[in-house]
Image (cartoon, rainbow, N blue to C red; front, top):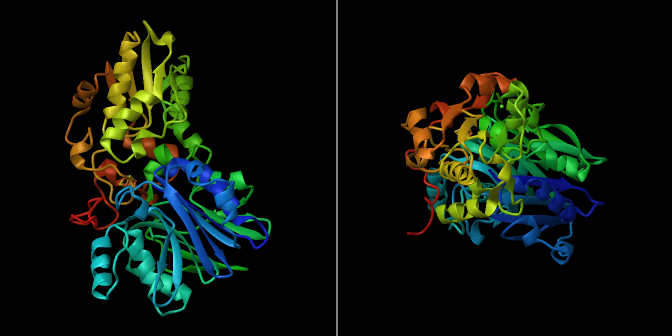
Length: 445
Ligand code: SF4
């Protein structure tokens, strides 16, 4: 995951706009947040561990002046959840200095890192983002060509925003696996992972950055199709049913509408299961109930980095209402990944007196690993890998369990299958997959 935002505006307070853009994108990463600004070509960055509101205050924002800014909210997929991996990363090279924020995961990071090492580059982080920054910073070609050269070498998932030489840069991998869009703020330009960030800062959606496209923005937008778009593309289908905020639009489709359409029914696991539960409730004409109350100040458990935090998180996060007592409840969620959270919620509902707990999941079983920026982790941790639905049900302790079909999920996006990556559901990967792609592959031992 990770949230990206960028803005060019000589007259506006760009750091403040970026702060609000990141605030809208907080759901994409909660481990760290950062903003970099460019003031007549001079780069300053501030980044730290925590939520956007924890990292920044008025005083810190006031220290970030410039006409260009980028921001990042991080959820780690390559490199640990540590300060030195927080972004935007600032890289000084022999050709230029660049600040960079990356959403995605490179599948050839190890090879590229080794190549850079042979050229004398000493890594300061353990994140794959540094590879991209170092390639551009050390390439003597003009900026646009240097970025294009780097894009050709990268494989995997990458949506990137950057600042260098007084320009705002935005580019996307040829499959468009992670989202990135361009917006207009009067005469100024904004880029963001999702349209909800454009909405919050008052920018008009212009268009999506195309897969394989590079945008270099100063007074004007120079758009170059660096690499041909790979077939229909491979937007991560998780963006539709889990990652993106329901009020965002992806490929012109409102995410909330897609989630409601794919539901067949009444008690959601909030907030991720809510749109599907509404659809399910309407279709079967069974009353919808907010039977689980969520403490909204606790981060989403899926994107916290270790198991200890995840288990602690669930107890802080939900509380069932007394109305579930004696009822046969249908619980709707968007996915089951490891199953820990779901199992604890089922148990919590039985403890609160529910007579039966029927689970309905608005995505098919997640059976395989993601190499493109979603921390589904070890295949051994995926509850559905190598198990029948009945075995998963038994492990979770629900009365019954059913998943939406792959066809049903696909139909809800109203886009053809050829435009999506669905590899964690089908094991059909859109790129060659690395032999070794552990999250902590670049950590010192
Ligand atoms: Fe998304 Fe799954 Fe593909 Fe990863 S493997 S990009 S999570 S659809």
